Amino acid sequence: MERVVVSDTACLIALNKIGQLGLLRSVYGQVIITPTVASEFHAPLPEWIEIQPPVNILLQASLEEMIDAGEASAIALAVEIKDCYLILDDLRARKIAAGMGLLFTGTLGVIAIAKRRGIIPIARPLLEKLRETDFWISEKFLQQLLADLGE
Image 1: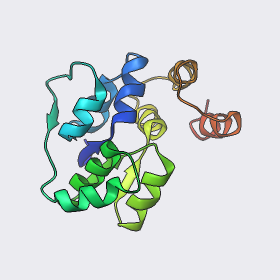
Image 2: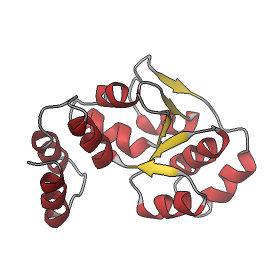
Image 3: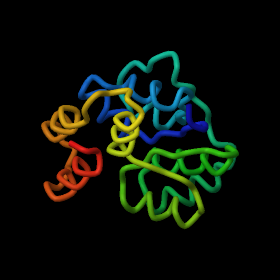
Image 4: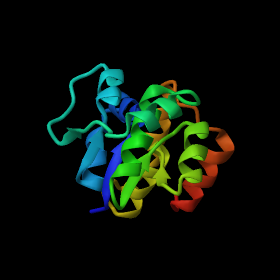
């Protein structure tokens, strides 16, 4: 199992659309989201996802001037949790997280980790299902990811 993980809404929605929300639990064990992320998800949450608000609402408000409220709340919470890993897909939010020294991955990273650990036998079907939703993956990046995963 990995360290504690804080997820933004995008990963939850993407994995839920392809019927793979449980992959987060299989890969990370404990997953925490903020109340803002929970409200953006618009679906029932599994009992293994913990909801925790960030304490520093001023940081969250400051981040909301640059990025979506869910991303801002996830980053604010990740700053407060020691040894935390953050799941973000939005490029701007990732740049902010990197600038704050936070460790992060995205939805594709979750699938790649699941493949590398043998949690899923092959990643291609999940990646293809993602592409059938509104989740954008360039063909070049998809081919590179599949090559990296030995597929």
